[in-house]
Length: 160
Image 1: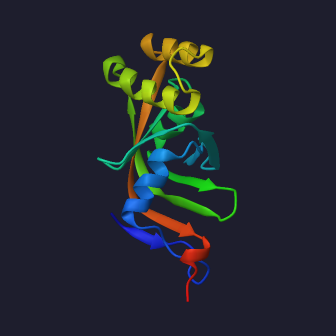
Image 2: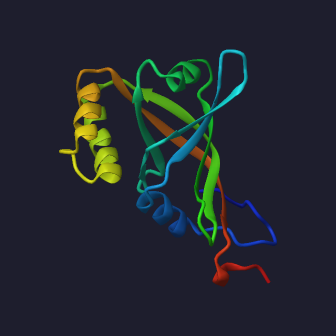
């Protein structure tokens, strides 16, 4: 895993273990950047599931979303997950996205996303979103990062 220091002199990069913990355990949104049909950047804040074992992000979205349309032309994405509260900490990077349409593949991943952000599959929003997954109107985006650029401004992490 390639890890870069996003903010030399102001903090230190996260370790691989810290990156995996931060991405797997926070309930922050991931912001992904794609390019539209004119080549202009578009930012999409969304919920995600991070699998620390295979180091991949998973996002549930409508198969008719702008994200999917943009990825059909160019599957390269930039992403950022950051905590806006002091002490600032975050992970950003670049990766390639793959769109999964197989309902049987998508259901267990979407369930993990719903439980992560809503606490239960019984939540009305989870029920609605899972209905879209089960009827094939939603897909799962799988992002494979090529690198992470990280920062941590915690007191114990300050560069000397």
